[in-house]
Length: 598
Image (cartoon, rainbow, N blue to C red; front, side, top):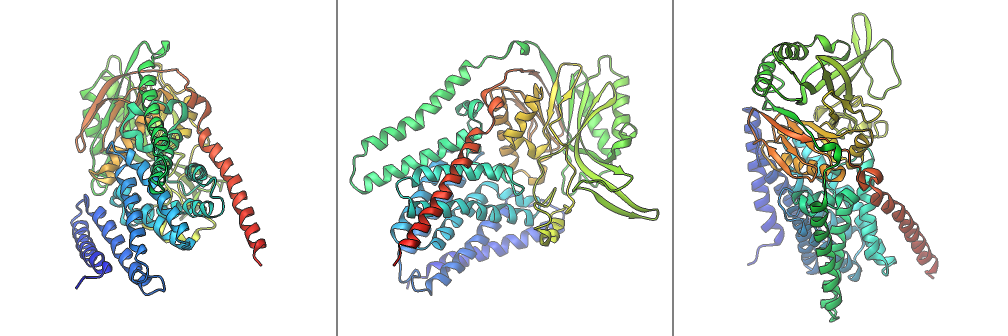
């Protein structure tokens, strides 16, 4: 007797889920990290959900028992999700992303041919995209389980929206649906970069960060060029499968797929080999990234600043001759911005300078706040009730430049993490306030800077202070370069994710920022990976995970302006405009069909 599919999937998934939940609970009680347990928890939890949905659908008029194609559709969507997830960094397997996109196109075509409703497209595409998100970004759950659930399952739901539109294109506008699928997906990615519920981490173009030598054309197109490349590969693979299925000649689609796949890669290698540093970059400066290695969940915020300073300054003294020292994100604080000169960090830094002949300068990540005498027009304003009345302040994730022992400039992180650092569309989404608080944030969120601020140093360094998550935003990074930045600096704290693919992905994405703008990058992590990256996106040197170390290296100060620096994400903007026309066409086609019905 064969066991039903729902039992074969559901029972093992439930057992794995319960075991992982118990282990996470036990480790959390002992204040120990979870490692890879959230991956198995999320994946097994989704397996339970799929088995329940499968059971429910098996009792419907077209359930698995009456429609064996249901299991086939589930297998195709599962394979698509696996290809997308396994093709994402840190592994250099990005061609699988093209295959995954092609499989989703194949699934959409099959559902339309089978005359199945839109809700089936939503379910199967959502299933594939959940697998993609969990395989690629499950590590977010190491920050908190709530954050992992939201980042993976809500993001997959948002990603399913363009696939619903692609289904409608296939149904109502079959002649242009393949090109329309590429346009809609790129348009969606651009919108997902720029609205308040942004999660640009999963953009297809990021996949090629694992092979920077093959992504050198990003200096012209940015990551949307990579997304275009990967999605067109998916279209060509789909057309190849259709030609084989219907007995058509395989020559043309095979040649087109081969040329599209190979020519951009050869062009990339040539672009990289032809890149020559600008004349202004003939001399180098020395930069030191300090990696103090305080575990953020249970150690960093429990250790007094004074004790942390001892480790910081020991590492600084190990490398006494740098032009610039970089302290990672939120190294110290919370500091009153009106009294920064009197903080322990500044006193320790002044003491260091007194003992050096040619002391360098400092770029430090700190937590800070700014007080106001009365309410101001700022969505991040917070109210504290005191014995003397109400006190008003804004809280910031900041970077500060210190020159000759004095505070020179202050920059507030401006690309914030939704849910953790601010509540998107706060007035409309007030019901999510309890969730935001459970993630460690507040509905007020953090205060931000109005524009990109470049830190100018006497050594000639003009640093772009890209705090953690900001290094994902290519179009924002180029604003710093347009403002004069000749060095990209990423103070971050990637230890929240434990020793998982998260910190590796973050470093690889910084390599893409180097390529896009032809700027060297210095990344300084509290723990995670600190690194020095050249203007071709090549890692010159880096630290290991879980070590306290000072990483010193020579960097060159580029002044080259790339096509991407000048133009930005024009491919994404064009896709949004073309998507608007496609949506108008869909509405018109649907209206005509409705009118044509007797």
